[in-house]
Image (cartoon, rainbow, N blue to C red; front, side, top):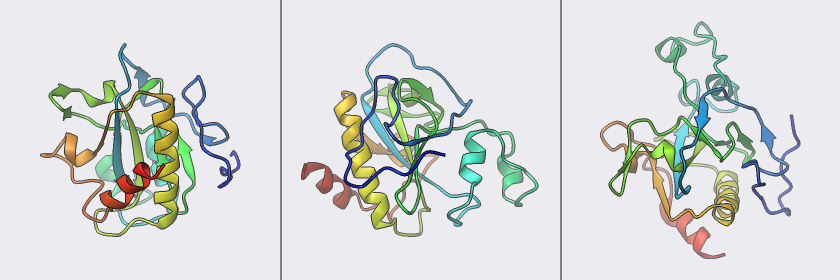
Length: 189
């Protein structure tokens, strides 16, 4: 496991699409990204088991190692093949699962500004959380730094919640995500 990023060192994405100095846990739930620009950042929330933080459930889900017998909820998602590029824990620690150059399986059936299949042209960031609880200050700080690094590396023109690109299916990052705080932080740079 790599050491956590130093707060005073700005995050940076390297030529292989990896967060420099960050923790990398490769997920098999990805494939080559089709040709074209990476133009969208999608923000999600997840916790496994639901509403519980700090465990290894999300990492196990994204690496196909989730034990369906470890929690009753896990039986409902057994066999699910999903991933995201990044996962931001409550303490701000960032874990990368998929290179930004590859397509992570985070958006599902989705559409952004008339363009279908958002996985093809987006980067997915999961925040450890739920729709019902506020996110931690450390998560906003890490998300801001990560967003800046991603915008420095790629021509990202849009930022959306999962609920924006799949409104009939998804509600995340949820009503407790402070969009004004996040967007004001991005604009402050």
